[in-house]
Image (cartoon, rainbow, N blue to C red):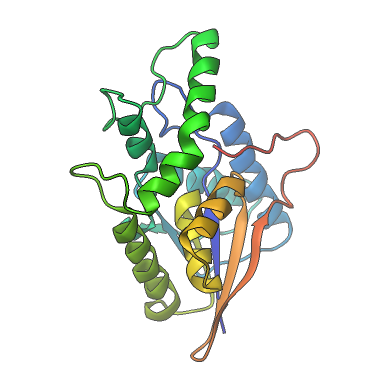
Length: 234
């Protein structure tokens, strides 16, 4: 029986100069995950990270926590298929943003402007994502929703079939995990988007597999975030 743990990255710098950078709270979340796993004797045979900085930074902090407690965490291999979808680009394009293809959502905004930008972004998020998934919205040069979904299935197959089995951990993004869960549960596109909205930073989602069956065992677990450590979704 193989076991795969998918981990969403810790909180990124939403509406900062670059989204693809952990926030101070995100660093605390990732360290808490590593501390929790190491103290409970959690072991993995293989580790994988997506191509984004926030994926690698989350892994690095988890690994550092293991080292600090005298435990061993496996070296990570980068797996491009673990990348997030390009929903942020699609939403900015739909809102007429000229910086649609950059990873910066807010740039050097003041606090008042940042709050207004966050409200504006989420006001359109649900509608734009569903229209993109339906093929109503297309952005030239951007991976389509259908291609993203196909990529997540291919990567899930790779993790569950081509690897050596045992305990595998993969650090990725919420969209990828929601899509993988959607394949495992047989849900439609709207349900995949619903899953992506509720998934928290550093949440664990567990998959077990054998030659006959592949199952989603858990979703959105946060046992490592005690009272006082913020639970976030960006």
